[in-house]
Length: 351
Image 1 (tube, rainbow, N blue to C red):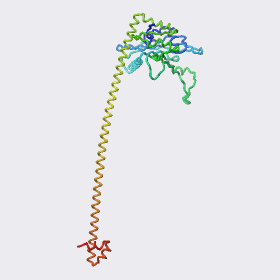
Image 2: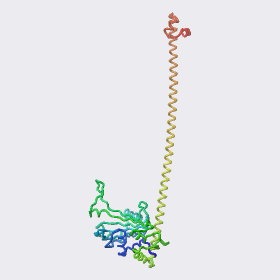
Image 3: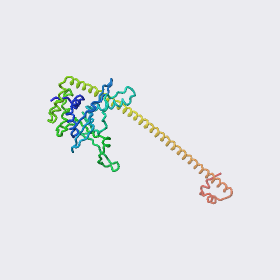
């Protein structure tokens, strides 16, 4: 069976425009029965002559029945993204509008008046894998934690319900081969492994009985020639945007590599200059050490010179004393005893 690929905006919108199918789809995702469904904002469009960009989102006001039979009203926000670039393009576009002070695009459809009046449940259907979330589907619940004890507490408060919201994240490319749960069976209709060459057409190899009605309904756009052209155009636009994103990513990668190379060059230059500085410092220290060595050697020579001079001066004094005592008639023995010289040393001293 061939159906339109629900990951395409036109196909997903076609499926969710039918209230009974929308209630069925949302009931499966929430794992709670959606009793009533009121359509809110169907699509936010930011007209721009340069971009013609649209970001796909569906808003509903719903009444859901819980397992205990109680019913309560909630707001459902369904966002679908076929590739990572979808949400990033949306964020970049909105950011640019906030930064711009002129020629600001406006949302053509105002948000529903009831938005914010009831607890919000956000649903994200992703056509790509998020590496940090290795699960096909996760539900993010509200947790209330006592800031003092750090323990989770059970509090029923509409005030808290309106401050925080529950979220469901579905990654259709993580669909397992064996589909046991109701959600897994439903996501068979999103199985991208069955994409044809045209991409906006899925050739289903199997159809769960519970969801045959939706599958048959999704055959409709393939019969209408205008719908097929619109889907082909959406694919063409998406390919262009994805190619642009790929080029931008490569450009960013190139800029990053250039910056890294520049940093490496600067670091190499810094290390080279540091090595040169250390070399010069080592040379300075070597010269300083050589200078100190020479000074010490000179001081040693000077000390030896002075010591020799002192010794010679002392010898001269002793010799003069010997001559003086000899003139006074002192004997050699008396002179030796007085000067500490030997008799031979005394006899060797001549005038």
